[in-house]
Length: 322
Image 1: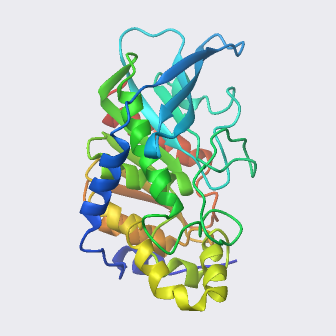
Image 2 (image 1 turned 90 degrees about the vertical axis):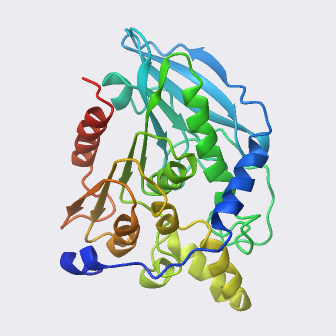
């Protein structure tokens, strides 16, 4: 059993993370570089045998115009444009099988699940390579290119995420004014960053979010994936300042300070993978309307299906979808 801080201290906790002076300029330039590529979205029907959900194999241009895969799921019986949910995935997973993840489309939403470049095979398959090389790294993706914000792995992932939102809005089946973001763990960290960078999404669901409150997170838990950073710095002893400087550009706390969409977070008090104080670091900094559900006796699974049920009700209300 592992406990971070009591709930009353968590609600008062404020992250010590600071932001680089050029944080906004860095991300404006990064996005502008990838938006030079035509936003061509390839959508191919997939025969699944389902009768109430239509599935499409999607390819869109992500970071540097590189192709990123996704699944698009739509209610088979639809009339007019639909509110959409864009989902980002947990660490090590990919978009998986077309028959997986049917909740949002079954509830009447357009649902786009973005593949995470270079991931897949830990708990679900992936189909998007990360063609960008990096220097030496600890096994996993947390330390790929970590000594510079220009080369860090999550720079590419966060751009992919913003481009996924733009690709979703471009679909004729989607009401571009009603797009929500949804993610669990790493997916929640990606969703938080994308909500801030896009600036126009309608709602955010961040379940037990990862990628928050650096450099504190890797020193208060010895569980992966945060442990990858500690292991890297154990070997690269003279890179500590460079790594910490890089992570300031990718910290969910700094994105939370810019995100304005109504948001629902969750955390679990016994979560040693995404410690609750790191989640509250982002939640307490969040600039928009927000609520958080705290699961006192759960670990990284958080509220499980209860989280999903709460998220569905919250998104349905915000997007005014009966």
